[in-house]
Image (cartoon, rainbow, N blue to C red; front, side):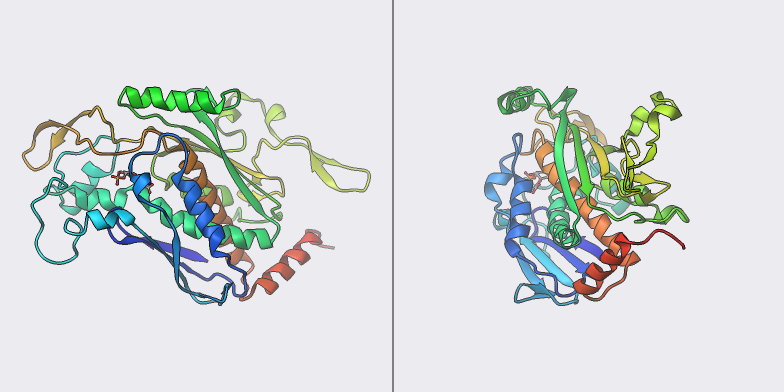
Length: 364
Ligand code: EPS
């Protein structure tokens, strides 16, 4: 399974094509819609979310509620496009509008993207695609991946761990919302941390043989691709630096029936780039988003003069959405690796392989 996305934030919509998804998987469109709706929620979201009402349209690959083995195309319409048709037209001349941008926001793709593609006279050409609106497509694909994983007994969950420097445990919903409101009041933005867990995995996903096949390397790559991610930790993560080997490594024990078990999971379910049967545990750090209502010092790329970054409608905190996106990315990576490693045309073939896996792992 592999995925490719396209679409601009204020264009007609976001598209994702999922190729190599096994046939005969029951696909309930409401499961995809529930994930899309969850991504829109949470305190700190901006006015755009009052315009959008993300719902998936299935354009190919699914008939009568089942995958058919053909590429699946999912499309989520941007309702805001109705307000942007002239500015985002694919033909004709650029319109005279207040939506063009020549100053850049520190921390966004604006500066490097404009210089890379030659868009100094209209940075909107960069920010439309660099927008975190692109996460809609990943969440749509992620929920398809999760549907497949669930058929194989694998569950993925995510939650917010920390807002700014405050742990969520111990904060009430009101206190959480109040932190965001005070940041909004200060015309600033705030980041945090989320944690994602996958359970029910077989031993042996990924491969220690090549850098590109290592499960933790692939998860880290997917997580770093989410706009705003600045760090990814697996299991104990950065704490590993402060622990002795005897404290960190998860010892193996046998129960009375001869089954292997561990008393800790500091490895986060991955050793040597391979899943070891424990839960996969990944935590991610999100920077505060770079569109500020109190703009930072910047430059105007067109005039090459000092300026302040442009100010436009945006979010204060996206942590709840970030958790939904992180969960989707983990589901996508796991489904991709499972489909590569246990190539199967149909769901039944894949389920049978998973049944066999339960009794393997001895060479005698
Ligand atoms: C974003 C800017 C805002 C966010 C957007 C990401 O959009 P707008 O400029 O239209 O207000 O709302 O996120 C989404 C639209 C979304 O669906 O998550 C940015 O600059 O990255």
